[in-house]
Length: 253
Image 1 (cartoon, rainbow, N blue to C red):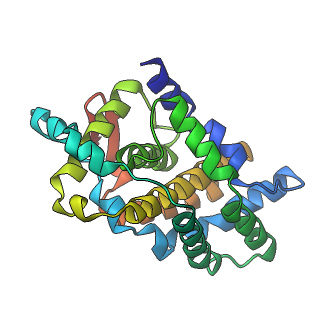
Image 2: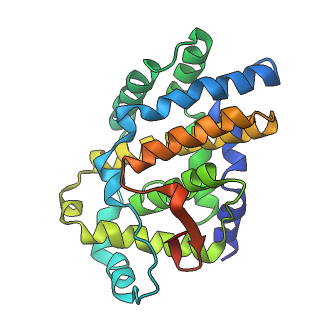
């Protein structure tokens, strides 16, 4: 419980430092980078079918025990894990870079994005934060849960409050969503690793950008970022702006 609480209360903050490995010279540069990065969320690479498969269902006040039990089935848990491959990671990062760099006009920001994508720092930080909370970056449901919680918080802050019971419920809903999808059994380790790496990048950079813009007092920039992240996840079938986090998971406002 303490580990999950640590994730709920500090999931975003430790990721901020890792999001831009080449630190800008000034706070103004950092804020400008955050504004420039808002355009990347429209990239096709973020519309991963595997991510949408894990879209958590909404709490409707009913009994979700059967779905939760399905998500906890040992066979399902095994199907959600993957053995990472350095070659898959290299290929995924290249795909990620190629997809988002065309949406950035500023050469300096392009260079920072390339450094971020090619460096291990961002993914290592994401791994450390999840591991500390008892989650695993080689479990698709764990990564997907962290992803949806982080982007929900980005879109809804300052009205977003992440709490332990809600996170646990979202984890159950995500696992149940994957369990209910017949395509899960056909996913290869490469499919799962690619989706997990892309979710880690998007969530981490979005969180870091939101924190930077908030710190800089750039409300217009923050609202642009929130709108772009909202639209990206809407493409996966989930309207983050219409969700609240309850003890039973996400529910309509």
